[in-house]
Structure formats: structure tokens, C-alpha cells
Length: 152
Image 1 (cartoon, rainbow, N blue to C red):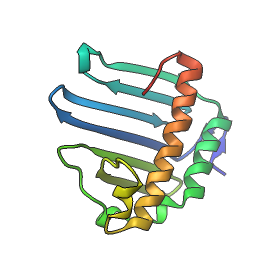
Image 2 (image 1 turned 30 degrees about the vertical axis):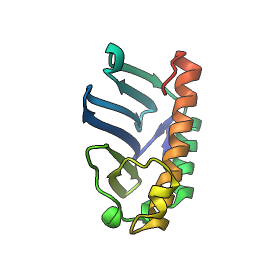
Image 3 (image 1 turned 135 degrees about the vertical axis):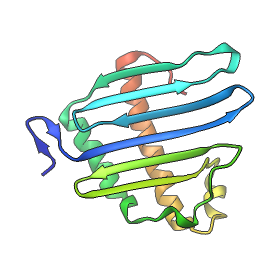
Image 4 (image 1 turned 60 degrees about the horizontal axis):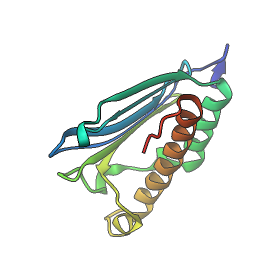
């Protein structure tokens, strides 16, 4: 339904995690765009590391798989109202456009499932946590295959 002429219409995913601290603004961000472009950025000033930016195009099948992962997670039914807010440790954001639905989630960095379980909305935050793990793993696999970068 979303695919036409090799383009996933009305589908977009962006993930960001970062903080501002001793080494400046350190972050990791990636996005899957409707035209199949995967954009990746990783900024760490630790030991004078530099900003890494990479872009590549993925096939409609890859974009369809990202869409399937997002839809099956049912994260679009969640609400971040009771999730912990970002703090000095950092924050993370997930933005999804899927058809007519547009969701944006913002929460604190999640160190482990203990952080999820101790939140005011452990069920919703667990859905977010596992979806983010799946998306990061998928994106990092693509990046590693195509660019020979260790995305950390």
C-alpha cells in the first residue's frame, strides 16, 4: 500500500540519542526517508573523535522491512506522557510517519530494562525500548555492510 514506483510513500523514521556534557554535544542519529535514503550521523568528541556522517540508499524491500518492524511493534499506540524526561544523562527521540499517522516520542536515555520497569509506564516504554533496539540493530547492520564503519 505504501510502495509506488520504488518509493515508500508517507513512511519516515528518525531516531536520535544524545547528551551535552564534558565533550560537547555527543549524539547518534539515523533516519530512513521515504525515497529510501538512510542517513547516519555519529558525533563524539571523546579523544578528539570527529563527526561521522554517511548516507546511502536502501531498496524498497529494506524500507518495507523497516515499516513492518515499526507496525508490528505497535508503538504508534503508545503515549510518552508518563515516560521519564531527558536529563543531564541524555535523551532519545523517535519520530515515525506511517501513512496518515505521525508520532514523536521523547524520553530519557534507557540504560537497561530496570529503567523501563521502574518507569510510570513500563508496558509502553518496553515497546519503545525493544523497537529502538531492533531499529538500531537493523540500521547498524546496513551501515556496517555498506560502509565498513563500526557505529558503536
